Image (cartoon, helix red, strand yellow):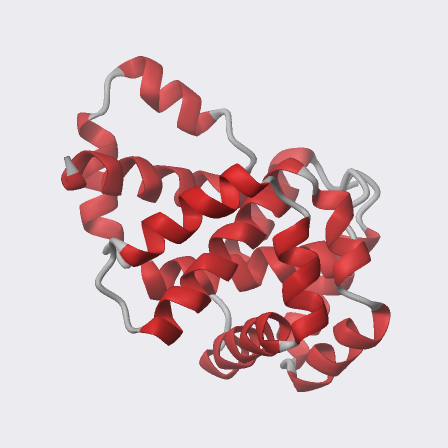
Length: 189
């Protein structure tokens, strides 16, 4: 029987730095395909509040990105909010056909990881689409919020206990992203 700790330890290895490079590229291209589809982009935008969309848009403009990078960044942030607040909506946005198109391109190792996560009884109902979006967001985050693991570890070590506890209590797939967000908040101010 797989323990919850084993599940999280293995799930934590599915991030962009652990996937073979060809999977990282395909996952990122899958993310770009998703947000460039007008119907999907509208579903993503409409799934969160107007206020959240405005804040994301202003944040993207403040980053000194090209117009295209701003659009990609805003879509990634929108998808992050959906994934964290309304994960069940991911399955409305990403169809079985979307999943299959991306899955065909992935390595056998990635496909095995997908099957393992989806079939694990304690996965709390995470769908294949939700898992792929988690990967997309990890790759997106690595692209738009790069921080070396060493720098992140050094930053984590300096955090007060209450902030460490908040980070440690996040789901494993959200921990690094939350730590990066906190890191960027503190260095941007």
